[in-house]
Length: 208
Image (tube, one colour):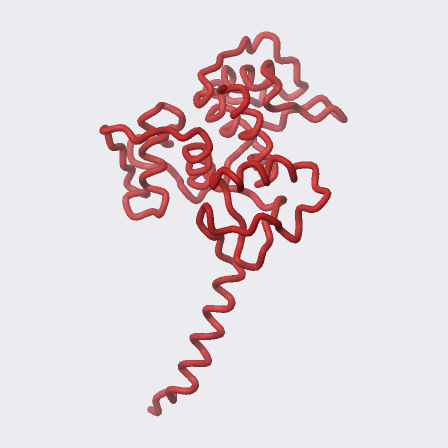
């Protein structure tokens, strides 16, 4: 069986690296201030604010991809960076996060009771954040509470019991809103990167 020539290996490596840089997000502080896909976007000011704070970043191809979903790990990391939470001595590590890039962010967010796992062993770092999960994390980070009895969305019954206080809090503080066209909150809908940036930007002001 013949082996690949050094030239072929080099070309394959270059191809792989090129594809990798097009799809991989860069770390905070490494993104360009201007992204090619947010000009005129409704969340542009919020995105730029968080980028300037080194709380969120884009991709090496100078895109932000505002409509993409955002993972639970990414959201926890952005919150920790945006709110400047100092690490605690207590360490919480889940079975599925001990080798994850966001392990320390997730541990810190859990120590502050901002986020929790699905159970004692599983966090689901790569699972996309739902709107009700985002609401709860924001409410916990801001330490705000709300009265769920005042939440009148048509789909209020679909909001999980554990998420109801958080959803009520962010709604009543105007940190999140529902969909006026049908008066729904859509709690299990997946949050986008743009939505996450906008909500965190509002939450920063509330925290102050």
